[in-house]
Length: 262
Image 1 (cartoon, rainbow, N blue to C red):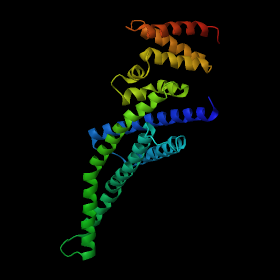
Image 2: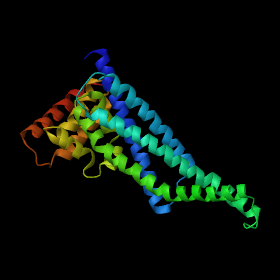
Image 3: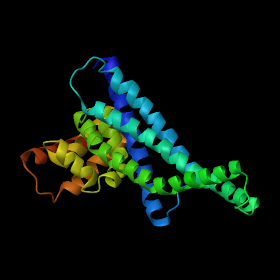
Image 4: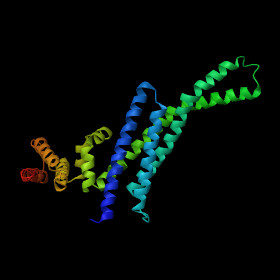
């Protein structure tokens, strides 16, 4: 593998990991909001910066390696969705800023003005505009948040396809295994094992074996030993086909070979 191709795989693995982290963070905030009806400006501001960085990554790496392609690819769609999420989060941040920072000041201003009947026309117009601004924010915030959640949901199958398209890259298969908690959270219908079953002919047994093999080939013998042992423990009672059984035997053999490493 050439240096540039290897760099591409590393960058794809980074984008996948960052996407998993950022999407998980958003989902947790979304679930929290549904219960408490509260969302802080600081958290959304951080979220906006995270999506800004992710947008720049997808722009730079996914577009850089395929600048002249004519066929629409999963990376193109994912890049567009991430950009859309970022811009929607900016709107969301504006709504929260109005409600947190401006609404209290509007209320103080209105209280101090006293009798509304004798207001200066300019002040009366400003009060009307301020009420409209706050009203728009109150109505728009839950709708915008729901919209961002739907865009994240739109992005997930494309992210899954990107993972599948790079399923035999050592950087990526190690990344999604080490950070499988994010996979389990975002894809609760089977989590990491379902991913492997969808990707590899030998199912989750082949997937976990490849992770262990990748660690072993890169000199991470302790991690490889742990993974092979876990595979043998979890796969012992698994009803599997010949290919999966072959991978179980290879895991046993690989575990024996690791015995000679410090």
